[in-house]
Image (cartoon, rainbow, N blue to C red; front, side):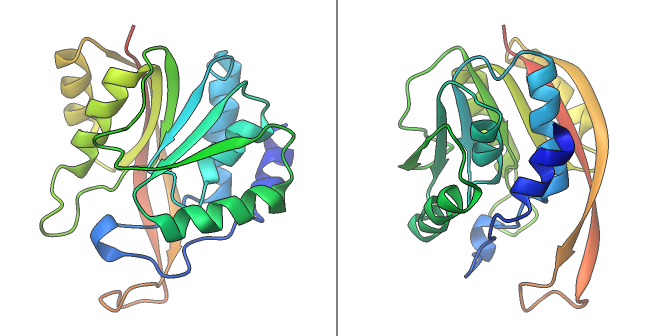
Length: 203
């Protein structure tokens, strides 16, 4: 299933005009398939799935392909959501996705028992520091369980944040993926990014 999911997600188009202020980097299909597969093994796809900062829909579409009962993809960028809708047609999932325009750090959603899947901005850009903290805060209020991708070296921060918000990191693993050059300040054609993925129980 994981391999088939990765193959379907490989057709998902990334950002056509990525915004540096939002740190819009595409989530690799391999990583998304792994996270969605892991969520399925833990029965975390049996409830509403929220993809906070969905971008062009990678995690949301992965959850839809895995037959989650309800999937919501939330993003502040209307142009990214337009691509996400096209991607939904491209992957041809049997479950549909509700695409919502809104700020993931102030989500216009009401939920308390959802599963959140997200690849938040790492806060690497000036003026966007601690962006992943704000996404985790949203997850703590909306989710029973969340899966999130963070910059390498984030374990102490994520575990501390989760504990302060009444949650617990139950699983953590390292990941790496190759990012193609997409902004002027990138000095190489591609770069391998070291990352970490965390499953947090907010129950």
